[in-house]
Image 1 (cartoon, helix red, strand yellow):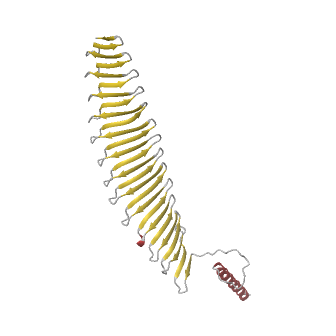
Image 2 (cartoon, one colour; image 1 turned 90 degrees about the horizontal axis):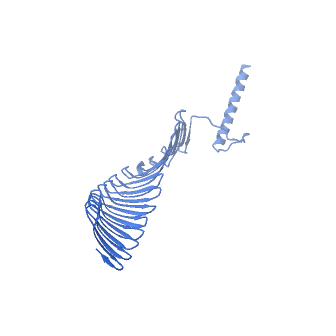
Length: 338
């Protein structure tokens, strides 16, 4: 009775092996003598699978590692044993690699818990470009043959930024975008910004700077119009041209930055102001609705002389140091008076 039991068990094992062999042939696309009753592709449970060519050389491998490392799959390139395509998975993510015939990497794709990464390599496996994606944005980096960054493109919560570097590893140009606008800057060989174009919520600005970083020219567009400021080597404003409510105005400043002359457009015409070094108005010439007027002030800023023009003629007033008229010359229709 025991011999019959052993024979039956052996026959059942042989049948199971035959069924497994037919399933494996069907899974690999090989012809089978008997059709399978179950048309669904069966699952294969194994720790590794190796595919070989006719010469017995491995051209494809599936390796199921430990649960912590994850499975690895690679397919060989034209050179046997050299992986052309490689994929790996672990707890934090996965990696996909394309390699050349010499085994050096050409393209790498990786993923971790909080980011993804793409790397493009040149001959010999040297990195040339990289792309990284984070939770808040991403980074694209382009490097030269010495693996030094030459271009970087970044994106974050509040906007993006692009940086270009020269051969001295200094910034040559940059473009930034923020919540209120953008900025374009160019740099000299020492990495100092020399030209900046910026935009904000309601205006735009162009700044030209010297090699020492001090401002030379400032051009601003505002809701009321435009403004041009010229600065001296001492970083003090030397001249200003701007738009005002009734037209435009020009200001000239001394070496200390104080206003010494001003030409302004008013509702009635024009106005010229001359200031002392203490910014006190020393003289003023302006046009009114009735004509023109010229005033000269003393050192204390009080009126000294005033020449006016009115519809009936003109007048000259001379004032004392207390600002009271000391002499008056007035011309009317019927004559004049002193």
